[in-house]
Length: 261
Ligand SMILES: C[S@@+](CC[C@H](N)C(=O)[O-])C[C@H]1O[C@@H](n2cnc3c(N)ncnc32)[C@H](O)[C@@H]1O
Image (cartoon, rainbow, N blue to C red; front, top):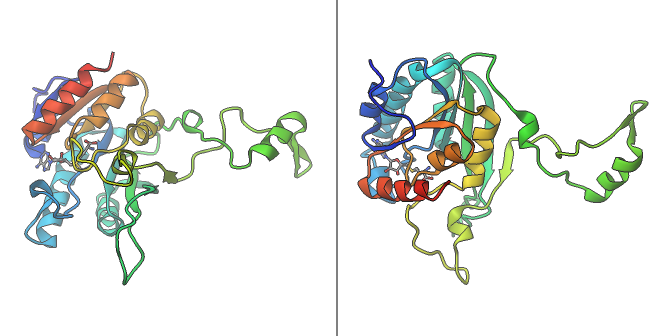
């Protein structure tokens, strides 16, 4: 299939039609934040769990051939749904890299018969073994600043050698403490109406794109909502191929994108 879709535009289109226009082996990184079947809005409501997984596995089947041979794939979802998605991707022959737990610093709902929800999952898979992973560019601050200050001067003796901290921080673990947009935008503790029901934080997507792609790479997101992946891709000088089925979101995504110089 010819690539009829232009890079660096956001299309109002169903994910299957969109994927059908994209050339096989053309995508370096797919960042996919799909429906979760949480039933809070029309596009996230399926008749049954079976219908939800039929839909999910169908878009995964359509997407896998589009990844380059060393391409990477990140999929967001609930921990429960991610357990099935992980099994499916393993069965399809992709290489498991990480189960990322996003601690949203939010979501303390009124659960009284189990623990409250406070996380989402991002599964990270690659197609081949020689994938991009810029681990030095996603380092995070060390946990004990006092000890690190001391170590910077004299080093810490480990197995007979002096260890000095990396000036860029420690390696990033697979537990990410990033405040959700919903929580960030609360006023006096009250949730405010947002432009999208589940926008992802820019810094979360920035970590994924920085780690798993390089400048001029092509990033795919076929559920782009109000444009988070496209905005980060543009900021980081990557190319993007993005769509969403909802006209109102695509309009907002375009407006947000135009603000990025
Ligand atoms: C979880 S949201 C993505 C939010 C996005 N990451 C952001 O930060 O704005 C999922 C998106 O999938 C879109 N969607 C649902 N079904 C779709 C379909 N069949 N094809 C394309 N987009 C679809 C919805 O409109 C929604 O914006």
